[in-house]
Amino acid sequence: MKTTIDLTRDRFDMVDFCESDIFFDPSWQQRGANIVFPVWGATLLPRELARNGVEIDFSHLKDDIGIYIAGYAWLALEQVCFGSLEVWLYEPNQDHTLRHFGKKVILSEEWGEKRQDAYDYMMCGVLAWPDSFHDLTLQAMGRVHLSFNESDCISGNDYVKDPRRHWRRAHPNPPQTPDL
Image: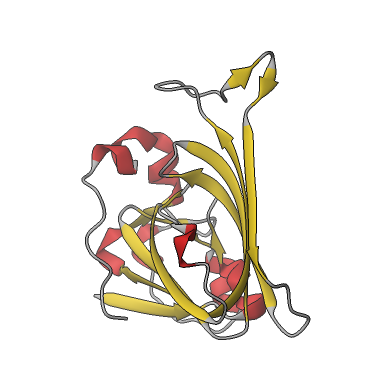
């Protein structure tokens, strides 16, 4: 069953992106733009869901720490006005960051215009391309929501026991952006 959760403003804390692969393309760079991008492996935080009144029955997963979405979810932000991306490139086929003359290779970019009346949505995780760790901040004035299939959800404990089985790299590229 497809589920959509409202993550606007403080509700964004209901999801953790640290274990996720994010397919973010900063080429939109248009003030006031609505953007949608896929995320593999976002983690829903049951205590935060309950605190915010989100009622999804995950009791069969027997996990109150985290619910890992072992599939593509879609993060949508309305009226994005500013973005900041900092990327630590990985060494090809390695799990550590690329170094040049002993220093980590870090790329950063900002675009758009910061606004006092917008909200900062911050996430970190693995950027799908270029293969890297990243800090991403998107500032938006509109609604934010995450759509996913409940059938893709597994307990955080199951993910931790065998993460390679559930990683995106074991699965095909994301499908086309759905109509949300």
